[in-house]
Image (cartoon, rainbow, N blue to C red; front, side):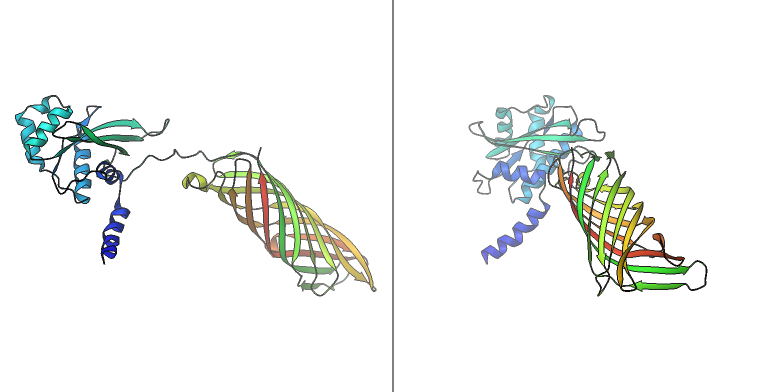
Length: 359
């Protein structure tokens, strides 16, 4: 039952914990308070910014109360400070803070200071607030614990902690090497140039394999481009005939630098979309009077591509992408005997996996 109650009370505190709560726990974790009151002196600012100090004082008192610590009444503390004219100096020594603590019946007093700093060089609206606190025994004037934390100065009650500055979305040049699995269908339109005997045939194909090499230029931001050379080989269904394709593609690409928005991710981890556009040739097997022959053609290609790149080091990353080749946006023309021309298309799906090397 006790463990259950502990979980109920501890988990909400853990979820809502922020820098003030962290400092309160760090400051008091090794001190036996036995419900004796602690007096929190008004924090002072090294930058003469009283607003920062006042809010930080209130937030720290709130954090102590959330830890079930008995905190002396603020009005009583302010009254003694006014009577002793300590507010004129604005700085509390261990001794005069201890005197205030004795006046309100506290065993310990907490003294705090706030200092503004620039979180990241070269950025605007990046002011942080450094808070240093210490706890002093009112009898010995000795500091028995100290802690520090950081918040955002624009909202000193926020749960801000210092983070690494956002990395710029700068990509080096990449040389990609990859293998592919193809799931194409073959669509061919046979045209008799001198006659009117056009025939359209769609043929299923077995899963095919291929590969490629791709170069992407260095860039900043979302846009880049590159070139690739691809080879795909795929057999026709229930046949020994196969088709080989060779394309040189230009690839305009949009990349979203995930490592910029999620600093825990490794550099160059990104998602991307692109549209390879290229020219190439194919070599398709066919039977002529029972004899196996190969016919070559020339044409163009357009695909839609999307993928994920995962960086593993400064010079190596892995990637996977999916491509879709629509029927109407690619075509290869072949001329065969008897004045017969063939307009053929390889359509549908392709999946690639590869490794990237950067200089």
